[in-house]
Amino acid sequence: MFDLRGKEALVTGAGSGIGEAIASALAGAGAHVYVADIDTASGDRVVDEITSVGGKASFLKLNVADPGECRDAADSVLSVHGKLDILVNNAGVGHVGTLLETLEGDLDRLYQVNVRGMFSLTKAFLASMIERKYGVIINIASIGGVVAIKERLAYCTTKFAVVGFTKCLALDHALQGIRANAVCPGRVETPFVKKRLAEYPDPQKAYDEMAGTQAIGRMGTPEEIAAAVLYLASDEAAFTTGTALEIDGGFSVGK
Image 1 (cartoon, rainbow, N blue to C red):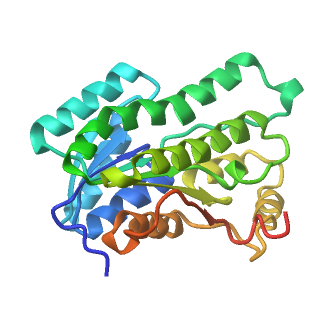
Image 2 (cartoon, helix red, strand yellow):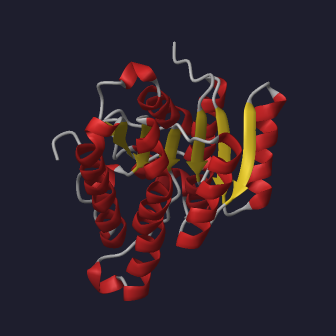
């Protein structure tokens, strides 16, 4: 249904979890996907998995917290292909704590990756998208960018910023062929989450508690988030911009 043949896409944080699933979904629909990640081994693995089933992908080493690397990444992609059709800003980091448990350095670290990284990479590509009058930008926020989550002050602060950034971007450039949307996942069973769960004294109890925060009683899968991104990346979503799409299993229902 979603045909991305001939499209160039870039996904940050694509070496694992949600980013990996997004890269695979876009490639499965025919796009050539830049798998951008700070971890070369993980990025190469994802590229190998995509190409082994006939997809098109290339690895791009990228630390989004470095504005210079973001500009270099855009220069590299545009010099080879002359365009980028789809940008998925997925890279992100988290933090647990209330205000009193959060240091200035904690907030700075999250801001550099979750907000400024998205700002820098989008800015590096935006002018070329406007020139072509075509660009799809999808920012991975969180349900913590829509409702408050207990003991996640720094994380929610940055994810609320992601939603605001997305809406402003969509409004400012709607008449220039740019669509910008945010995806707001609830709790998703990624390799990172599984690793964290294994550290608890009772991993099954911890899993059940995390799963229970969703109304449907389970965590999401990376593939379910990727399916939403695939829709937003496609021309079927041509009338969708400026939205914060909640894919959260009912986490925010009643909040």
